[in-house]
Amino acid sequence: TEDITDYYGNSLASVSGPQQQQKYIDIFKLTPEQRLRVINSLTPSSTADMIALYLADVYCEQDRLNTALSYCSKVINMIEFTDGTVKHTVLAHTLMGKILTKMRHFMNAEEHYTKTLNVLYLTNPSEQAVVLENISDFYLFQKKCLEAEKFFINSLAKWTKLRNKSATKNLCFPILMLRS
Image 1 (spheres, one colour):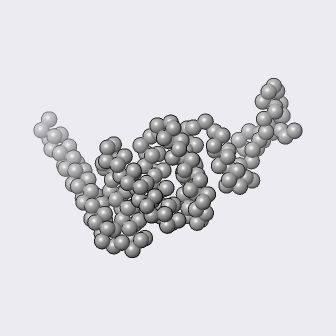
Image 2: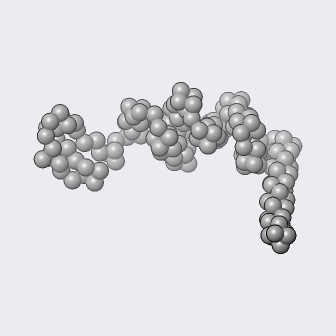
Image 3: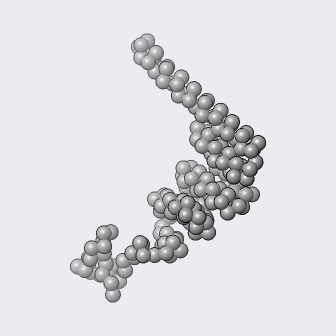
């Protein structure tokens, strides 16, 4: 039997009881598919979801698209199961759109970008500009320049509106201070 180890791989041979039967899993020696099985075995949590999303993004950047798709799908399923945070929902659907775009599954990618935009529309309109920019890139990838232009213009309008609101808030604060 293997020794139980701590996070750093140091032996914990002095541990007694049922914990002795546990084995240390060296995550670095696992294949991406084996890592996904480890992630699937974890209790759903926002930390595990974020780590799985980061790994999906890494695999997407390496053009290991099927692996990236598996990781991202797992996170989306867990978010829907656990009623995850808006931030995780937005990140997962945006990344899924990116992966599916690279895989040339444009209808499915568009569906995920639309879900992201809908979630933000209801919860956090200030972040819509970023999603609109992602959708613009999606259309550019397909050489649909007119659609891309529309979304870039909408994104710019959102950014301008946000900047003006922010500038107005910043200007109002000193004026209020002078009055008091």
